Amino acid sequence: MKHMAAYLMLVLGGNESPTADDVSKALSSVGVEADSEQLDKLISELEGKDLSEVLASGEALLAKFGSGGGGGGGGGGGGGGAAEEEVEEEKEEEVEEAPPAVDMFGGDDGGDY
Image (cartoon, rainbow, N blue to C red; front, side):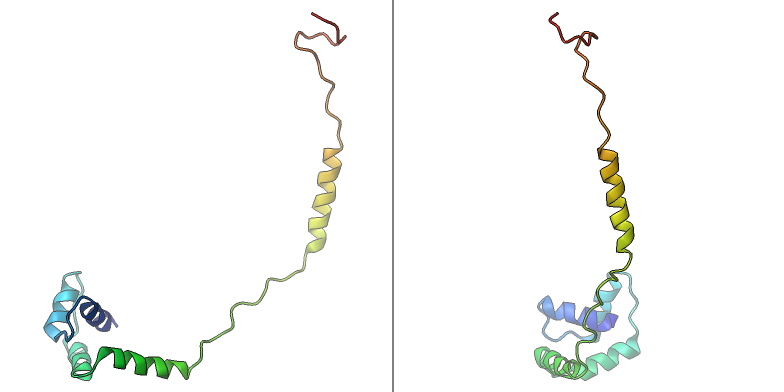
């Protein structure tokens, strides 16, 4: 896979037909060692082929497999009773009265200064 990825990056970079040496240099520039046997096999399989045609034929093969699952199922709806109890408890707490207001100077008779 690393060989194919490097090959594709070289093609995207403008090298229409990368050689095994090109791919090896690209991989070694990022500290990855190329497997010469696998790389030679890849280059021989892609030699003389148009990359867009190769990708299109691969896409057609993948279409036969389908796209897989239809996504995850919805979450479970159980446990709603506990949430209702919490709401009721919150309402009870809000009912508590606030302490009476005291004027700024500590008196509570409500008169002027």
